[in-house]
Image 1 (cartoon, each protein chain N blue to C red):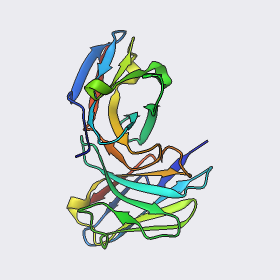
Image 2: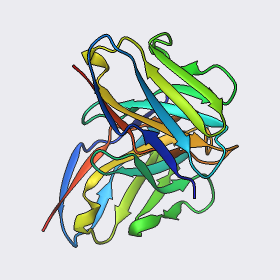
Image 3: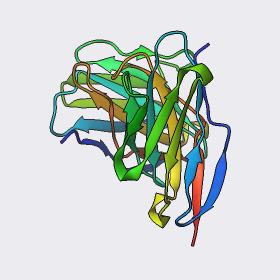
Amino acid sequence: GAVVSQHPSWVICKSGTSVKIECRSLDFQATTMFWYRQFPKQSLMLMATSNEGSKATYEQGVEKDKFLINHASLTLSTLTVTSAHPEDSSFYICSARTGGSEQFFGPGTRLTVL
Amino acid sequence: AQSVTQPDIHITVSEGASLELRCNYSYGATPYLFWYVQSPGQGLQLLLKYFSGDTLVQGIKGFEAEFKRSQSSFNLRKPSVHWSDAAEYFCAVGENQGGKLIFGQGTELSVKP
């Protein structure tokens, strides 16, 4: 149980285009989802927290107009990187929880912007 | 400020040897502490967690960790390392079981045959 999936697992896009990453809780209803960003050989940095049906709460320094987060259902959250640039290339990881449970992490999405 | 420090960026141990990965935290309230493992290109898998009670906690894959409040530490240990343990290990602290997590920088573990 408690499986979180992400799609795609990797994506390459041209600079200036937008990319959408999906995060799904497969066997539980995720009231809260988190989005993290991880640079090579570095730690995970929390980008935003999203509660189902509410606007996401972004961490300081994260551009909400660039990283659009939607949590429209209890099993799906999406992160859209708008007008992506090479500096947005990173490993994006989501996690999900239900109620007060621990977070369960997805396998991550590798984004490369050319 | 809340923070997690993993002093060792990279550790190499021989297969069968014991392992200890260090983690120190700075947190204003009673911390919820976690250790995660990440294989290359993968997400995070929870090894163990500490919320309260017995300060020595057992996790999966033969790992254990000890919470020492006086030292603000939560070091991860394993008595005998296997080659499959080679991975990146992250210590994290949170305000509750499912809340925001602050991660350490990670420790990369290499295992020599």
